Image (tube, rainbow, N blue to C red):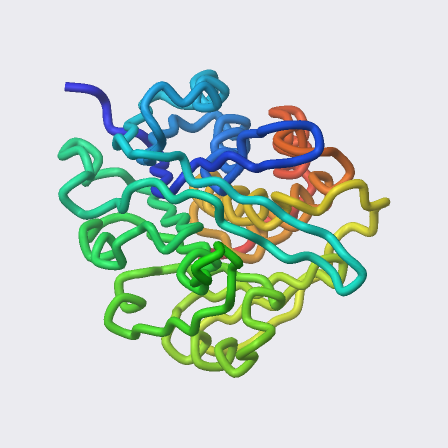
Length: 285
């Protein structure tokens, strides 16, 4: 039997259609590099088309990669115009259910639910009783038109959230329903709302504390939220549950990420160690 990974990532690796060609994307793709830089073993449960060439880019960063077969790989295209970005979902891979989780993964200490296309069955949250479970919410807040245009979908389920320790989303994710920030804060023990260059807000049992971030020259923002989330959960493991210090580390790594393009925005091992060394340690919450 394979060893249990330190950190599980569950969600779709995606193909992103860009002017530079078809590129690997998705939360799991960014996060795997971050976690690897912390020296943790990574397991990914995802779904793509058979023989998807992009998944080869994940292999250097994971200890175990489980791919559920699908007719297509989830594929996004962003169209930019005078009014901003319009996102389209051109193809969707298979759903991921509790039955798809390898048995030896159920004892993993860190679990990251990373939906992008509403593909992660929320009941997966109930499977990991002894883990620290984190949700990056954006994929449960999406629906799409028949032509693939991505729209906002309201999601809030206290029964699922009771088994999730940490929720992370950006203020942009809930721009059409800003009251969700307050609702999530009322039921989630640890909620993080990221606000780009403004830093963000950490709610502990509903009590908000704002945090700042490094001010840097923006090159490309895509993936910064994924870097923040993976950096946060990885830091918590290394820092023995020190949420304040872990937030500082995650914010620093996310700021560094926007100075680079694409998957190369993930921090190096040296940058991780520098960020860990820079924070003041606190008692775990």
